[in-house]
Structures are given as structure tokens and as C-alpha cells.
Length: 289
Ligand code: CA
Image (cartoon, rainbow, N blue to C red; front, side, top):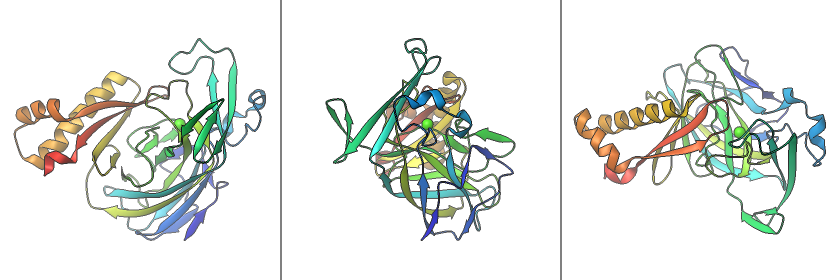
């Protein structure tokens, strides 16, 4: 099994980035990741010395043979093993309430017996991947910004047992991931989750499909993930994508399928705090049976 070390990392998903490893489709790969702060905060007073150029690293990128532009990368998340310490940060000017915190604050938490120890509270971990993506169609996106190529989608369904599909824009796909969270809730209101280092094991395949945005498949259904600067625009695009998804599979008229979407599709928020906000349209598998 190939292992990609966290020292092989990117800070932007670029159409021109160079791979650190090449794999065959169907291979299982382990990605070692440091936390979203670049592993720099070991003490709650370390915030003063943070080097922002080392924030949001993603491990990779990996070149996948036969992953041609126009196809879809299918990434099954097999396991997320997290480190035993997490960090949560809040910063003035960021988050849903940008003016409640002065300066930059950090909280270190221990992770013990599959629980995040937040003061006296014991919160069950639910590890997930914040940043996951491929090379974009053109230019570059900082790893902190999500778009069609994936990136910082901070979506809690991107976790062990689920599959994420990513549109491929460059031959080889150039896949990378990072920013693992021990626990995060929808919205990620204070601007960070419980950020941890990790070892993520994935199986990477290539499929013949056409998708416009990343899609997560779970046992219950499909989440279409749309990330745009304006959240209302993101809601509209996610709704349109969901209606198209239903219409292609059910072969009924657009008007009718739009009405059906109002009955079965849930529009949800993943995160409200990154440069592009991420929303998701959930389509339950039950309607295809
Ligand atoms: Ca993130």
C-alpha cells in the first residue's frame, strides 16, 4: 500500500501542479495529514506565532493512471485514524459572528476513548475530511477555497464508509486531501472544527460519468456539494443540480421533477465560514426503488 507523507503537501489546487506519486486505478492509498493549522499550534499561546502560509495543507497530489479529463474520480473512504490531540480556533473577523472574539484564540483538546474532551464534556468523535479535491480546470484555488474541483468543502458526510465522486479536469486527476476533523457540525460557525492530524485510507477508482460538482454517496442517498461565494446562489445551483439528477434517472418532465424535488430533496448547509460557502442537496435512494 502506498503511503503519502504529510511533508508532500500543497496549499493550492492548481491546474499545473506536479504529482508526488503515481498510482493505478483501484489502488488503496494512505494519506498522512497534519491539522489545518499546519500542526503549528501545540499550546494555546502559540497563536501569536502562526505562519499563515502554512495553514490548510493538503497531502498530495497523486496522479491516477487512466483518470482522463472528463471522467470522474471515485474515492471510497475506508478509514480515518485521528491523532489524540485536537485544536479549535476562533479569530476576530472570521466565522458567523466575526466580532465576538478579540484577536486569535485557540483551544487544545484531548481525544480519548473516541471522545473529544471539551472541558467536562465528552463528545463522541465523528472523523471527516475537510479538504479533498483534484486539479481544477484552470488557474488555482487556495486549499481553503472550495469549488467544482472539491477543496475545502468541510462537509461532515465526507467520512469513513462513504464515497466521494469528483469531476476530473486534468489528466491524472491530481488528487489531494487534508484538514481532517475529529468532530464538526453543519455551519462550522466559529470558523474551525476540532482540527486533527490523521492517517486516511482511501481506494481510488475512475468511472465513466459526467458530473458538474462533487457528489457524496452514502448508504442512504446522494449529497451534491456546491460551493460558491454567495450562499443563495449556491442554494439555487444545488437545487438545479438535484432536479437534473432526478430528471436524468426518473425520465419524467422537468416541471414534474421540480415538484417532486420539493417533496424529497433536502437542501442543507455544510459550512458558512470559508471564502466559498458549501451547501448540499440530499437525494434519498428510496425514490429509485
Ligand atoms: Ca476546513
